[in-house]
Each structure stands twice: as C-alpha cells, then as structure tokens.
View 1 (spheres, one colour):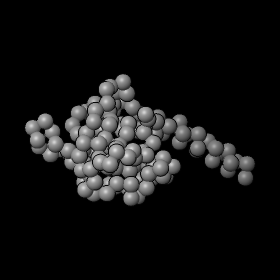
View 2 (cartoon, rainbow, N blue to C red; view 1 turned 180 degrees about the vertical axis):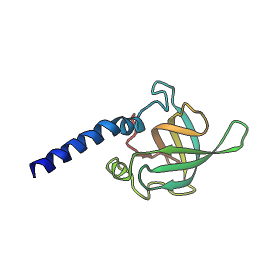
View 3 (spheres, helix red, strand yellow; view 1 turned 45 degrees about the horizontal axis):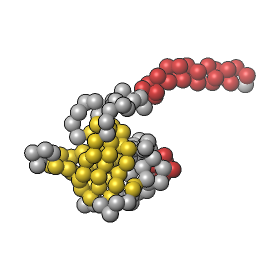
View 4 (cartoon, one colour; view 1 turned 45 degrees about the vertical axis):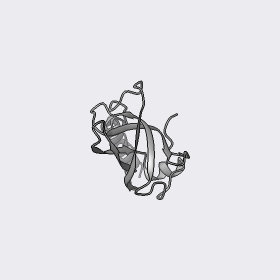
Length: 131
C-alpha cells in the first residue's frame, strides 16, 4: 500500500510539472495589453452561450463605415460567472448593450477583457470584470 501511494504521488507530481505551464498559459494576459485604453462598443446581443469552459457573448455593432461587425467577449467559466453575479438569462438576444473593453492584440472585433457592460436603460451588468 505504501508503494502504491508513492507511485500515485510521483505520478501527480509528474503531471503537475509537465502540464502546469500549459494550464497557466491558457489564462495568460498576452492576448491583450492591460494598459491599453478601453473602447466602447454599442450594439445588439446576437448570441449568449452559457457553457464551459467559458461563457461567450456575441453582439452586432456598426463599424465606422456603417457595416455590421459581430463582436465577441469571453467570460469565465459558468461556475465563476455565477459567483460574479451572471446567470443563464443575463443577456437576451436583441437587447441593446454598450461594452467597455480592451481590444485583443490580434485586432478584429474581439474584446479580450471586458471592463463593464451597460444596458440601454443604463443599468450595469455584473460580469466580474475589473473596474
């Protein structure tokens, strides 16, 4: 029994050592510049995916030429989003929102970090994002 525990501990240590960097890299901030100025994107909710590993929000907004762009922001997992005050019905398709966020380094209509989301009536949506 003692040998079995030692083997189990050795296996666990090997897994942590081998994959610890991969897990940490998944949650790194290299996808955006945390010091970049936030932008505001006003639009209409197109889709809200309440699922793991991350909750996703898609909304349509007009670009400078008036063409519609589909924006996306990724939130935390379902359990963390629940802890942050979000729910499966936080957003409704067709709802008007204004998102304040930091754009992804890769460009395009991607918010890499959401600061806040405000509904058309002025109410703030609790997303757990940094202020």
